[in-house]
Length: 240
Image (cartoon, rainbow, N blue to C red; front, side):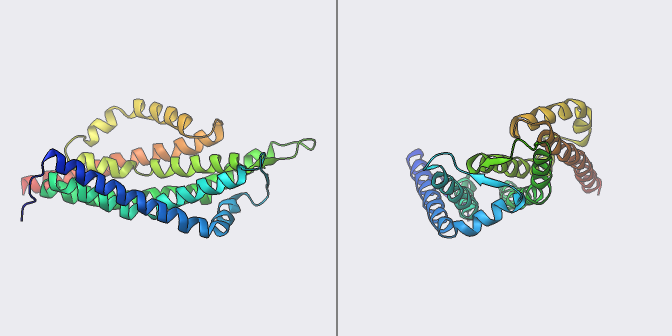
């Protein structure tokens, strides 16, 4: 059965409804996260067990806990949020567009989590080990917990975002917006842009930038292969 056409007022009402549900889901997720904040903190500091943390002002630690609870709340409520986005845009999409978008929404979560897990277990320990080694005997490596939180959050988010690249290329290829030849043609320019993006997304140090840029380059090359494979499949179906 076809979805009925909505008026502008009905669209705005539907949008408000979806936003309210998303907001409530995030708040409930944040409250639940704060209840288990000690366990969450334990996992957050695990990659930096050798470090000692301090906080520089009375409310700093509490504010950091609130930030963590909100971020975790957004993450654990993301399936609900994505479902609300899906329900809002679904009536305006064609059948094949619905299939691609639904796949993209939930695969997007998987790719983002894979990137964040990769950063957590591989990149963050390497980066912290590098910075602690440059310390000298007269200067002890004491870190503000809020600064550490900002540091690892930026890395987790950056790698999660970067690992979405193959999914983006798959969607663009399926929609005939890019081809493998196009990706190959602009490879040098894209690699330059990758290093610029890595410099923007990561903390201001060369190590983090390189550690982010290299996986991005690898994922871009993987995306070229995926795009070429999809192109061959399409050509075979058209010839068949």
